[in-house]
Structures are given as C-alpha cells and as structure tokens.
Length: 470
Ligand code: C2O
Ligand code: CU
Image (cartoon, rainbow, N blue to C red):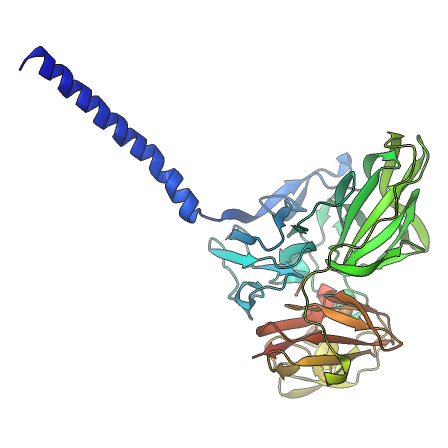
C-alpha cells in the first residue's frame, strides 16, 4: 500500500466516522421534532415551607413538587400535551377545568378514564380552543387531592397582546393545618364539613403564600388572573388603591367590561380576569382584600413605588370573544335540578342507588345531599341524555341552607338573568342558599359531562350528576 492510498483510506475512514457521528447526534433531534415525549407532570409528595418558620415544613402534594404547580401557558388553539406520572400513594387523574375538551381527555376518574395507579402514567393531549384563565387539578378523591395541593394555572393567550404593563396570576386557597404539627389535617371525610359549608381552612394564602406582596408603580396597568382553588371557601374580594374592570369570568370575556365596584364574589373553581390601574399614590398601599368574619383582610398587598406614567390610561376595552354557539332560549328543553339536604336542610330520605334511605342512614354512609330526591353520584344514570346540538335550560333550585358552586364540564353555559336575558358565560355558577337560577347552554360537545358542586366535600357526599351528549 502506498502512502497516498493510506492517506485516502484514513481520510475516508475519518469522513465515514464523522458522518456516523453526525448521524448519531442528528437522529434524536429528528426524533424529537416528530414525536417528542410530552412533558411530565409528576404528581408527587413534597415538603414545602408553607407556614411561618416555627412550624417547620409541611407535607404537600403537587405537580413536579410545586403547589401551585407551574403555569401551563399556550396560545389559543394550541395543543397541550402532558404526561401525568403518578408518584403518589393514591390513584389520580388530571382535569383541565373550563377547557372545552375532548371527552376522553377530561380527566374524570371513573367516568372518562380509569384512575392512574401509583407508578403508572397517562398521556393527556388536547387542544385549548378558548383564550382565557383556566386551571388544572386532580380529579380523583378531589376533596383530598386538591386540598393537599394538586393544582396549577392553565393560561390560554389571546392572539393579540393586551395593552397592559404586566400580568399576575393569583390562586387563592385556604389550607386546613393542625397548628400542633404544622401538617395538613387529614380528616377529609369529616361529617361536619361534608354536611355544612364544606372544608374550610385556617391558613389563607395566595400562590401558597400568606400575605403575598408585590411591587407596583402608580398608574401601572395590570391584568390580574384570579383563581379560587379552595375546597369550599367563597372569596369575597375588594380592591383598594386600584381601579378597573372585570373583563372575563371563568375564562370567557364579558361583552362589556364591568367596572370593579364593591365586592367580587369568587366561588370555588371560579375565575375572574380584571384589568386594574394602580391609583394609589407612590409610597401608598394598594391591594386585594378578602372578607373574613365580616372584616376585610389583606389577601394580596401591593407596594406602590415609583410611577409608570403621570396619567391614567384610557378605559380598557373588551377582550375578543371566544367562538361560541349561541343559545336561543325559545328553543331550549327545560330540565330541573332540585338540590336538597345538608345540615338544617330538612331532607328526610333519599334514594341511594336503588334503596330509599332515611337521613340518619345516609349520614352513616357519608352521604348528605340529594339531587331530585336521589343522592347524586357519578355512577347513577345521567340527569339527562341530550342529542348533540340540543339546547338546554336548566333550573337549579338550591333548597339547602348553604351556598353551592355548580360546575359543568365540557361546555360553558349562560347564567340566565332575572329579567330573562342571557347573562355571562360561565363554567361554575354560585348559588346562594335558598335561591334558584337558570342556566342555558348548547350541548355541542359529545360525551359524558360531569355536573357537580365544586365544594369538593359536597360533591363527594351527594352533589354529583352528569349529562350524556350523544
Ligand atoms: Cu374543577 Cu369536576 O372539576
Ligand atoms: Cu355544594
């Protein structure tokens, strides 16, 4: 072999090696762009500094260890792909609250999927059709799993950015902690909570922090995405040093923004998007207050330092509407839902499955609430079978002594105003004790859709039913 040939060979060898090397590095990149594995949401037990120093660390459950879990933020119409990996000591699933979703991706254990066992995983893959503020949370043994911290924000952005300085997401919650141990009380089935107003906490937080404080500037314009993740607490919010408008409820834009006036009520699972201008003076205080025992308490504090501009901006406009099938009240099928039971409710008996039981017997079975005379359970026949596209007007009569926050999966509904006009689109409606309200919707999403009280202890003890859309 001549020297030249040797060089050629060597060179060829080098080139082949380089190509092979390039191929090796190129392959995974290629693989990623074609079918990347979805990002993990690991449902995990984690230790968090939730309480003041002297209480030590608190065990929480969170996605990727965080509570609230990291925000998921996508463009309107984008696809969301996440792999739930269950590292909890219990089975679980994830519900994407408020998203008009494919039924198979709705995440309701025992209805739209089997609960994901410890060590197993489940791939969620869906499109987010509507811009707005949503959230995701556990949907198996929800009253326990959400109370332990399994939730996070899901934000779907409008195509065009708003004229604001910045935005903040505030998730309001109340943890029920035992001051002696600094741990979350694990009496999730407590009969008193189930039969009364639900499980209320003793440590009220925003984004997991008590007395959350933010720096703002005078005349700064903020979009606040407010989310109530509590098991049962209704947040009664007031704004101070801020002026602005409610621009969306439960993700859906209001046709006309509503000036922020006295009190904004946010029931469990409800959201509100507000656009506020900081009107407090420099060095002054602004923030969100929550009523607690008739007293306003600071929920989020804004420290006003500096000025964004010398003048306030012009009034904020409406957000672009999401595409939505309009309901026509004249063409609706009327359905009624009578809610009964609970403490001081006077329920004598109700059907549990195919057995008629007295209130005491029901209480022994951990059941306290009835829908149309039967304990409401997911496994029972649906409240109604609907044809796809059918229009429904549902009268919900709350004949109990407590407020309830009724949530419909898979579709937004209009609250029907007292004057018979269509009110805002919502996915959760808050009903005061003894009141009745009509909601109306077009059943345009096929599948099995849960309809339940989002006071999660109430759902677990009789306030659960569903619609079947074929
Ligand atoms: Cu946000 Cu059925 O729940
Ligand atoms: Cu309820």
